[in-house]
Amino acid sequence: MSFEALDLHPLILKAIQKSGYTAPTPIQKEAIPELISGADVIASAQTGTGKTAAFMLPALHHLAEPSKNSGRGPRVLVLTPTRELADQVSNAARNYGKYLSRINVVSILGGMPYPLQNRLLSQAVDILVATPGRLIDHIQRGRINFSRLQMLVLDEADRMLDMGFIADVEQIASATPASKQTVMFSATLNGAIEKIAARLLKSPKRIQVASQKERLNNIEQRLHYVDNLSHKNKLLDYMLRDEALKQAIVFTATKRDADLLADNLYASGHTAAALHGDMNQRERNRTLNKLRKGGLRVLVATDVAARGIDVSDITHVINFDLPKFAEDYVHRIGRTGRAGANGIAVSFATNKDSIHLKRIERFTGHSIVSHIVPGLEPSFKPSQRPKGFKKPATPAHQKRKKAPTAYGKRQEFNPEFKRFSRTSRSSSNKSNLRTKH
Ligand code: AMP
Image 1 (cartoon, rainbow, N blue to C red):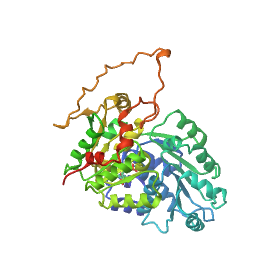
Image 2: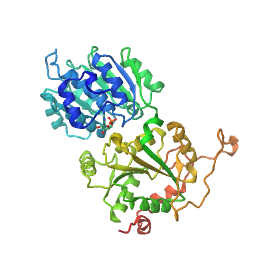
Image 3: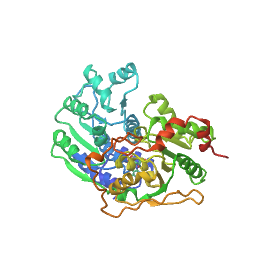
Image 4: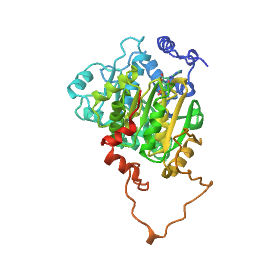
């Protein structure tokens, strides 16, 4: 199927052609006709499937017709969980709408100055892309008139739910006209998401594209068992020497670990920087722009900050620490293998990570093959649990309280992380990360 067959406005087709897209992705093929027809849609699609264009192209198609209502308020509102995803959506809107006349795209994000946002909101707005918290502030101050709103898009609704934004999302939705079209994208369609959809959407068309397994086909997933932090650092060093690695995102469990690792890599001569939620928006944008322009080879990030990063030269994702949730694993590794390219996702796992690994493998439907670098073998033999294995229940009187770890409360205490946080500032630890060039 071609984009022409989707009946999109010719000036949108021109922009698509300019972007080098030859055919719509499966989610685009299914969602675009429904959204052009005006139906509400609930779609399960991961990042990397072309979901942004799946809602943005029909949104722009509607905007090509002048509004039937007078006023200056937004005609399309996109809510996203993070600022990075909002930036990606705004950029996509500007790119796909660049040949249509006067499409004004405004981003209203937390962490940006209010006076600038007030000025932006005082103009006629076509597409408003916002994170929920900040938008509520502006709504409460009476700065937004939704009388022209034709389409509401809830992007990564499951993530907004996880981050506690759903009450805000529902409040925003209730401030918009009942006549609008509502679109909900979510990586997973679980019970909680279905309930929200039942409240916000009108007889929605349901769209579900490729399973996790199919979607990750262009990403080679590798597992390296590691003994301890020093072993992780040596393996990371080995991987960063690979010339096939153009750009990499290295994921750590905490913001502090991201800073420490980035500092150490930088001190060892790598063009490396950290990206996490404690950085202000300007610092995050600066780092992301540097990554996009190729000025950074290694980005050390936490899960929240890495959402929405869309850089085609990222050849490797390295899970220095495994993610807390299996969904995050999919989001993380989806930072590589963008737009049809191939990618490599490497995960480091200690002997205590086997439950985590099983959860990830169950979620993706893919078993991760373990690799060994000669000379950097783990000293332990990874435990092979037979299928269906269940740890016998511990009698109540023998149960001990478990200490929290870098992976969250559910994990057993892992002395490795404690050691890392306590000593990684020391020069002896830095030397573990040092790379010779
Ligand atoms: P998304 O799932 O929206 O994060 O998009 C992932 C990547 O796919 C982005 O880099 C888009 O530019 C790219 N993309 C979207 N639609 C297409 C298409 N039809 N053909 C090729 N690449 C696409």
